[in-house]
Image (tube, rainbow, N blue to C red):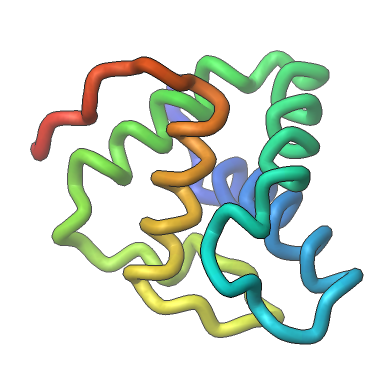
Length: 104
């Protein structure tokens, strides 16, 4: 199955849009997104996409040297590092105890 960038953006927006619908400034650190990570997880579960989302996040994390800012929210300009940081935090929060994603 192909995992589309639009699917990844859709689920990341569960975190970013939900956060910025309540707040004007980004959180001091990514743990400020915690409650929205669980919203994203539940939505992915409801749509049967959680396994695909995990694979997509692992692909991004395993290829951290690539440009990923295009996966961020279009309303807010996240740079590559910020997108990776959000994905890393979400991945660690949803799947705690997983072995680190190897590069490449």
